[in-house]
Image 1 (cartoon, rainbow, N blue to C red):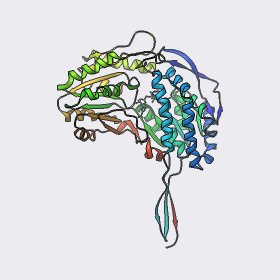
Image 2 (image 1 turned 135 degrees about the vertical axis):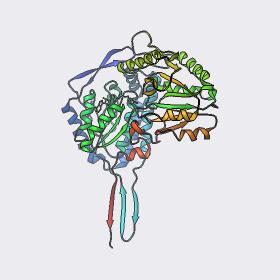
Image 3 (image 1 turned 45 degrees about the vertical axis):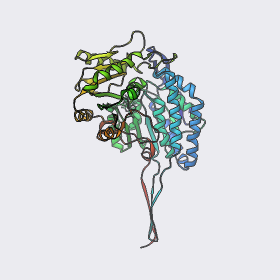
Image 4 (image 1 turned 135 degrees about the horizontal axis):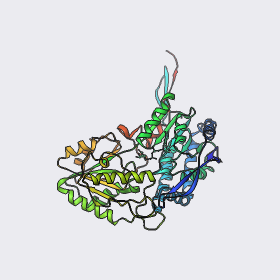
Length: 464
Ligand code: NAD
């Protein structure tokens, strides 16, 4: 682990599995409560100096981006081994991680003077909060760490970062890589199992928790920070709906439609998870998607030409399998896939499900796997109502030949981002957040940066 810029050993360790084999391939440090105290204390000690000068912080973030690019191959290899994504996708995630820091480094913390006259001067400032706890999931460990740590650090906070116990290694390696470019204590990286996350969230030192993960854990984190009124950002699960309109040009959009659902083996909060299709186009759409699903090359992400890796974790694999089996038992049909693949590892055949409706768990819940339920509709208002009929509200999309008609419908989706003729487009710098149970607050862009600051008014009275 990286604590106060140095290597720290936890004593205890826990197993890390390679999802392509299902076997343990490494041990990760299991940070003790005393180790957590030490990391938080290091962050608190580093805070006064780090918070003093934004130019230094900006330069450090740019140096960090460069350092990540220099370490790209090592980081990508670890990411594929522990997470399963094909190596080219892991390399892309590393590039995205560096890019995210670069884009963040272009931002400025606003300093507004709202009044300045003979009587008074009023300034609105945005000071940092202090120590920020960052807790990340296993689907994009590096990119999501950068999305949080970048703005937290630029704003002047110091950080203790804890990755998922399923994918700790690439984040621990990131901590090592950045030791040379960040002052000691500014970014501390520790690892451990879920109780470490709980201890970090409720610890008295952090003034803010920035969390990405499931809705269930997000609610626990919200409850844990409440007694201390810590600031909180939650980026949680989604069950993104896409609505195809009757005039959609499938030749133009089939490829992006397909990958919007199957990117990262479906393990993306912003992936398309349900597709509503006009009955008149239903067979054509299902057949087109099923052909693509069957043609995918699925396998160990370390091998060449693999397009889809395994699911990242054993529980996730079991869950996807259970939800698909339940849908099939209830009368749905697998136009492609529908079963696990033979052999070791958490491989599931890319699956297109047809002949199912809302009310089935794989449609109603976040399944987070390489499966797309395709649901027919007769009336577009009914499709919109079904898309919105959920506790989730992360993203959604509408696809059609007339962008204005599609945009008018997309604007009525109850979610943080609505796309037209696209879905799950990573866009550094653009605010991103979930409505309803999909989150609290936003990340990215100026709004994301401000979420790592307090608002402070400096009011100087010059005379009455
Ligand atoms: P998870 O909620 O199980 O775990 C997320 C992190 O929380 C891990 O680091 C875990 O160790 C930690 N944790 C577990 N219990 C904790 C507790 N009581 N207190 C504090 N921390 C605790 O989520 P996951 O399975 O790792 O990730 C998948 C989920 O993440 C999906 O629901 C997905 O949609 C969501 N996600 C959301 C976004 C977004 O931006 N909205 C992005 C990626 C993933």
